[in-house]
Length: 522
Ligand code: BG6
Image (cartoon, rainbow, N blue to C red):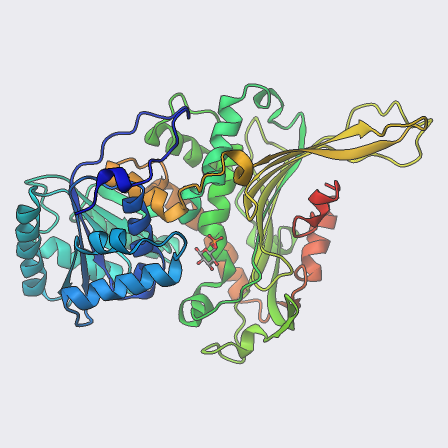
């Protein structure tokens, strides 16, 4: 049995923390437990939470999938998963005591008898563990199976809340268009209320993403200049060096707009652009995000080129190694026209942001792995140094580094020491790594925890889902009819058309990577 004193306490004493609701005892049922997502993310995250003493005293994890497993082979699988995907600080005895809470049931999701038997099984393990009810159904399966699992849960009566709460976690993508998202919602609403539905966007669980709201609304100094009067434009970048890895089946259908823009990118935009909610609670925060999405100017299908640029990666060199083109990836058709890069210019038509372009770009197999939000402020209204200095100075830029090297950089100008008048760009830096030397909760750990305590703030509400699909459906339609997007070499900064797009707006993209920040260049 685990000694609670063995568990490392988190966060450390001395932090100013929200009062967190103690999580109820609960059962986490992972559908698709023998799959990739469960072993890469969900199981290692639950294990980490356990090691940090953040899981409730009484909890049970029941893996449910079509693959045959015994409890012990499932436990061995999870042991392997933790060793492989989160090996740091591995503790055999903690892992064993965690594994003793894990059970497995083989089920066919569309077999009502099997699902009913799963319900009876859950009653049994919970009784043994000393609690009843409180269940999270986590759908870690391909999206096509969501309706099947939802139907199975509902028809077998597992959604009943007779002895405690019931929640369901749905991973992105939530639909692949407005219509399919609505159909998925309709199937959920047959058995669940909106407050039981936890739509996962793992970006919202990232520390640095959560920090956007803290930074904006806990520090009074930025809010007065957070508007069209002082902000010139905002750039949001999610650039990856990896390709599509083993996910051709999903990705080739989805493409970058569905994969990154409909969810992560627009969620980031909403956090930067939203008004302060009256209270830091799930519904007021999600209301404000919804208002931003409602204010984004719809794209004119007849003038898509004015707002968008697309690309697909070709062969090239990434990180010193030669890498194949998208059409040469396993299970991608040689004539695929799926875009792996997109850049879009968004306009938020409200009082605060009218006239401030939001430049968003995301792509795979680019030169650097970087996710950041850069708020470019307007230049000083009068440059009084122009008689003594020849070069113009650039604007101040505030950068939220979402990953890697999570932190915030505020660039400004300072006089270089010496008799000559020289201005130098310098940065004020905040780095999470150096903060208190603690490892933050990763995104999955955070959202799992929130789901257990019933906090929906970091989950996406139905209105956001519909608004984002409504905005992007026309873009996806147009890009589907455009043929092969411009090719860009793997390891480059993306297609030339993205550069031209920024030029059209009189702006230029920030270089990818953090080297320029280190060198004091913003
Ligand atoms: C996922 C996308 O949602 O996010 C992937 O499906 C992408 O294509 C991933 O690689 C990026 O997430 P992260 O946390 O690695 O930035």
